[in-house]
Image 1: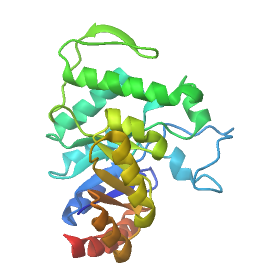
Image 2: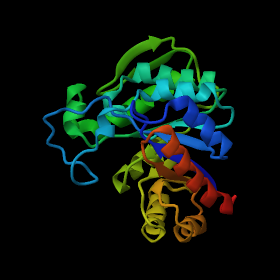
Image 3: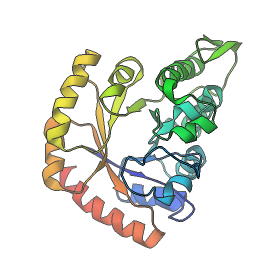
Image 4: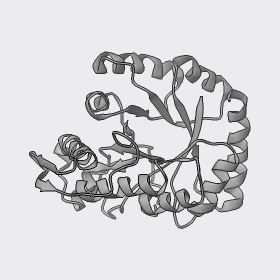
Length: 274
């Protein structure tokens, strides 16, 4: 079992570089960080977690800047977005950011993606919330073209460009892994465009039937990574029995001393299953 960390990196918590060093020192294999470009003050979209929206959502650092800082002080850590909000991202710029991260980290980038939940946020980026699924699929296809073709070209409903040169290309071949986040509505996207499913926190009992349905939709055995698992040995053993590839502990955003204490606690649990 592989164990990683999912968190929000903000201006109020531990800085990216010391976080990255602390993760490698404790033998975690990956870091996946959240993204929100901003949060509209007049927001009608309900917070999925219920109640008031925590301020970490509007204090997040740019994920590729933060992951580059982490990559500069680590050697083994997988550097992932968890998740990048594709309806809010220009595909040409995003393709270059991911490929650049992959290059400077010697092939350690992971591209976690999703369609987002905050309709007002994506609307500020010019995205129609009602078509964000189709927009996401098209942008992902365009990004893969930019990564894998010398002269990339794309003509679709939302993305349209004639042949272009775009470098760097990713170090990983054919490209960095695409971890598709979301629930069962994302299964067709996982099947068509994903290398793995990034599942939201769910108990092993809940997750098992969903994995079977995903396999039915995809027609293949899709690797699964679970976001926000508790440091509970009973649940971890349940995920192991399901054949989950990686578990991500959710790390609260906090100053460095508190963060290191939380990481020590997670590392102690993870060490039992390595």
